[in-house]
Amino acid sequence: MSRVTVVTGASSGIGEASARALAALGHPVVLGARRVERCEEVAAEIRADGGRAAAERLDVADLVSVAGFVKAAEAAFGPIEVLVSNAGDVLPTTVTETEPAAFAEQLSVNLLGAQRLVNLVVPGMIERHRGDIVFVTSDVVRLPRPRMASYVTSKWGLEGLARALQLELEGTGVRASIVRPGPTVTGMGATWTPEVVTPVLREWKRHGLMRHDGYLAPEGVAGAVVAVVSAPRGTHFTLVEVEPEAPVREDQP
Image (cartoon, rainbow, N blue to C red; front, top):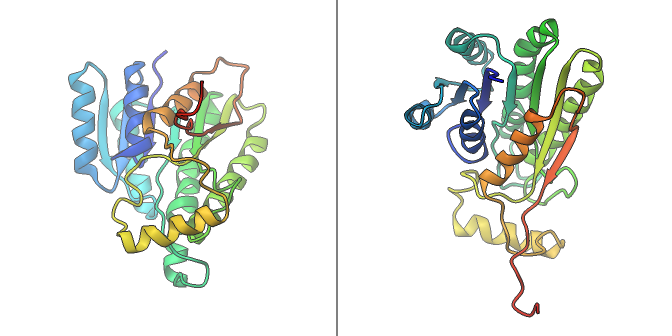
């Protein structure tokens, strides 16, 4: 069944992979991110493969941009039935190192941006008694990591928002779900220099937060998003946690 879908943070990583996977199932997909040129490249590839896709610029920290994105998405394909809230950013800094303005900006993107979208999209879902909202969070909610203070704070808040929304949506026909990935190979952190990465990894190891060198591919997380959205009516995946499989040990028989 074709369901109009919007994916935020869709220019790379989990967002891009989720958009491709959902489009492959026949859902019309609108990709949103600040890097709209990259979103358009992905949308063009989806269309070339026979799917339906459009790209619109989206800055989730800007309410005007969010409103324009929602309006454009509905004009392209109709009422939104699936929202994949994936846009996010991360700073490799501690609580005391992070300037208050930068900390607030992280919260605006990672947490408040999701609420801006929900505020505009979910009321229509409730009226139609059908819809899925998927919040992509992080396993930092379960295992907080040092030197990621604003990111940890925002993801904790995002899961709080999702849990509250789940209660509010009971009996409406609309489902809100959390997909909580572990370490994933994405564009976030790609610009960090070795001088930044080295102390971060050293701190993670010191606290036992790096058990092995495995990382998730974005497609692995996208598979969880697809499973949540594709669950039959009467089934609600409230939380799906996805972790990377450890590399096979050479000393195993």
